[in-house]
Structures are given as structure tokens and as C-alpha cells.
Image 1 (cartoon, helix red, strand yellow):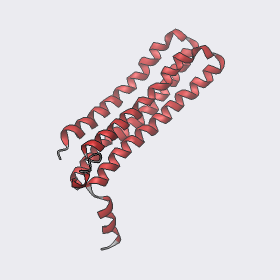
Image 2 (cartoon, one colour):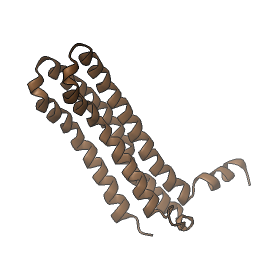
Image 3 (tube, rainbow, N blue to C red):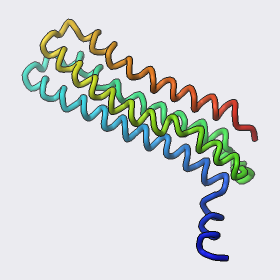
Image 4 (tube, rainbow, N blue to C red):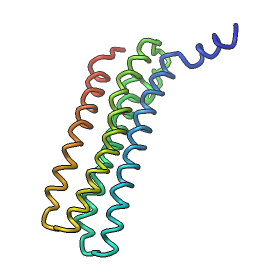
Length: 168
């Protein structure tokens, strides 16, 4: 058996592919959320140095990009349950089923990462708007929430593929 055959035997099997898909969904979305929350937090810290009384209004805007990380963790958990990692039945996963789990995680992996960073940028600008006009907080939240729409659609796509499309 040559080296490439050995590698493909180890890594290209159902359980590894399913586990990798779920893990990357959690990592990608968490990474994006950390970046998005950080971007918004930097803007909030600058505003709070001048106007500490706006903390409550700014905290809500900073927290918004964190939801994508939750969506990735939810996707990871559903994959772990559906693929059989929690009850020990994962060993019966075929390579095709593993690839399907991996592919079903792609929307969450990619869209949650990207949308969290974009939402962080929109939230940061909403924070700057609130710094000048504190009564405009709801407009900043609505603008940031518009980005969330695509995160929710990606979560829905992944969930439907995982829950309805992969039969064991």
C-alpha cells in the first residue's frame, strides 16, 4: 500500500468527513463571530471613552455578530447527533454519507464566517451613529440585522440538508 492510498484510507472515510464538516462549521462561524464582535467592540471602546453612559446601547450592537458562532455550534451539534457520534453508531457511516455531511456544512462554514465579519462592520458603524445620535440605536440594530438574514438562510440550508437529506 503506498502513502497516498494509506492517507486516503485514513482521511476519506465517512466518519472523518462528517466530523470534519461539523468541526469546520463550528470553527468557521466562531472565527467570524470573534472577528465581527471584535470589530464592533473596537468601535464601542472608542465611543465609551468619551460617553460611558452609552454602554447598554452599544453592547447590544456589539453582540449581534456573535450569533453566527451560535449557528455554527448548533450545526456541529446536529451533525454529531445525526452522524452517530454521540451514540457510537458513527462507524457505520459510508464515505458518501460523510461527504454529504461535509457538503451540508458548507453554507454554515462559509456564510456564517463572512456574514459575522460584515455584520461587525455594520454594527461598528451603527455604534458610531449612536455616538452622535443615541436615540437612533434601533436604526443601527436594524441595519446590522439585515446582514443576519443571510446567516439565517445559510443555517436553514445546512439544517435542511443535514436533517432531511442524509439518510442513515
